[in-house]
Length: 255
Image (cartoon, rainbow, N blue to C red; front, side, top):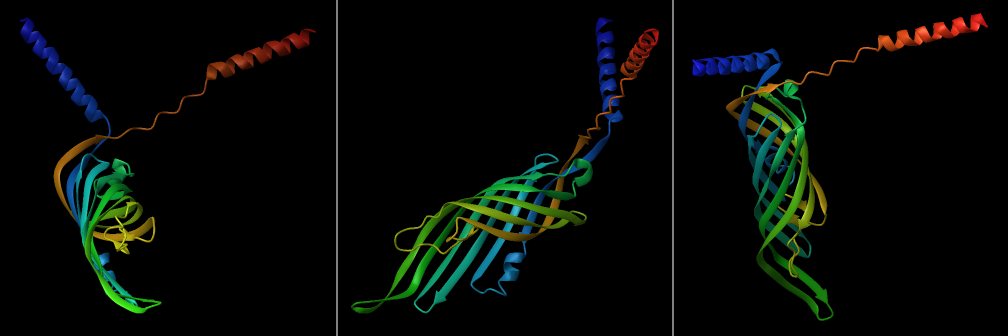
């Protein structure tokens, strides 16, 4: 009998908790795996034949506001002028987190306005196929063979994405990058770092425009926080002040 009563009490407790949760405002947020492809890099190649960047990313939602992200890509760069030519090619990876600054009732699992934090690695080969140097003994023509280099940088990337069709989004992000290590040597100093940009600068910026495919894998029920009710005015204090004022007036009249 005691076991039966205990089970009934436990069941009642669980039902009460469920009713309390249902009584609060909630919203279902789909958690997704996102796969994005940058279209701006190949598009700019038509106006600047010296550099071709390709990039894609994959992210996995941890909850309604945070996601783990990995960006990968490749880059081919070339530059030449009258006395030398330079070429580099390589790959890069950035990994970190995305944070959605929109509240769940605004984002609804469809809209993203936030900021990303990344750590980047750039692995590439660079060479100088041709250079000439004029000195006291005349002009020397030579080349510097290819060498492999690893550069490191950090990135902050604010951006916007919106779902245009079901499970298909579009949006842009601006990557603001700080160079940690260029990997430059004594012979060949890199001019361009894949995934970072110009190696002549410590801070660079770049823009991406992504087409994103979303794969929902879980739905999370998010409880919306209600605004705190305003405290009512202290009528008792006002009444007390009025009473005190009345007593004071009475005292003045008696004088």
